[in-house]
Length: 183
Image 1 (cartoon, one colour):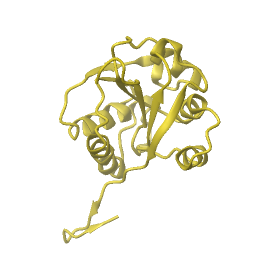
Image 2 (cartoon, helix red, strand yellow):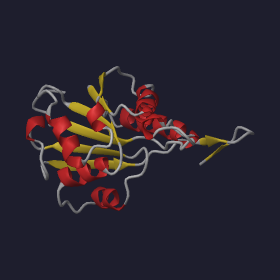
Image 3 (cartoon, rainbow, N blue to C red):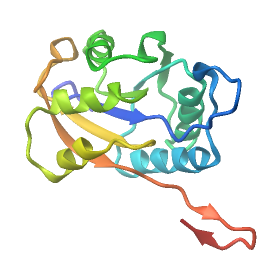
Image 4 (tube, rainbow, N blue to C red):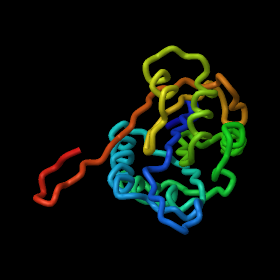
């Protein structure tokens, strides 16, 4: 992708996590559904030719596990930064992290948490009226993927400076004991 091509920010909420008793929030692992849905998110990105050249991932266990499962589906090996500032970050804090991305990066994947990821997507996309934005406003479920196209450079990221190009909630297929797929 050339520098004249608009930069894209992919925002991924981590896949469904488990709530084991006595485990601190930062160390919560993915649940079974999360382990099924994360690869589906990776396949969605690969099929849409939306493969990142940089990944910024929260340091939480569930986000790191989400990344590992997404990465296995991409057919690429982007640079990955495990960024402590993404854990429990507000929308404005997430925007600050992304503003530090070098100008030559064209597609960046941010893997984070609610409510920051949803609030950031809605803020950056502005007051658009399309169907994808309407769905993102209603709910930003686990493993949801939002693709934003920036209207300027990373360092100028601010409310209303992007367009929401896609919003999807990929789900993995559950295999029953007899081997037949179900959802």
